[in-house]
Length: 270
Image 1 (cartoon, rainbow, N blue to C red):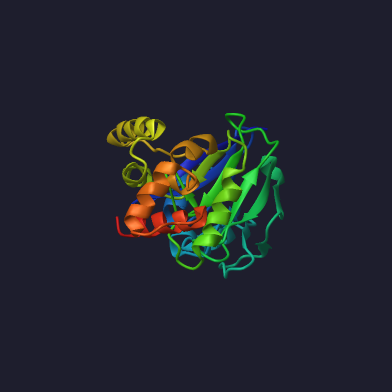
Image 2: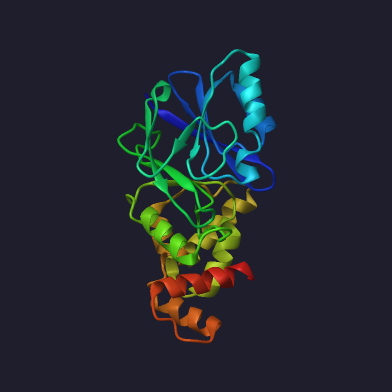
């Protein structure tokens, strides 16, 4: 069985991820903040929603849960809600912690949970391995922790927590596809160029993404290998980034966590 992954655009820049199969009409949704666009997708494609995966509690990721539960109830169809154990997720009967396993047998999909405190304290991600995907790669649903060229704001956690969480993700297999929840890439890359202007891979990727967005095409998914080359929040070890972070902070930065914290603060006001 081969899984398919489709973006359902929502709000101004959200992506709700629809996981399906080439072999049946079952559907899993990741972070459905808007029920209406999901129900339209379900009806248009004659699908049966069987599960929802939530990465964190923010409303643009959870706001559609109750309406989707009611939608399934109206057709007498079961729906399972998975989410982080450390956060209050509406109607979540399957709270998850680090290394818990989600097994969606209808899609032959097995996902491992990664704890990612930083953006929120209970944020989690879902990563697969040894499943058959369209491109025969691993897949990561990381919510608002890792973006292409960027990372989430520190609304609840510390810089050290986010730094550790991002290191967990950068240690995944290089071919892991990164399904984050927002189309922030071009803005992120504009900032990245201010931080590391001589990074040739970054320059080329900025040009590529600019062309995609001019054609109204998505820049997501990215891949871990690319993010390690171009994402400043995975590159606090870079000498150029450290120099520019120290200029911004107007002080010496003694370690990579300090560099990371500085460029995160810099991005907040960029």
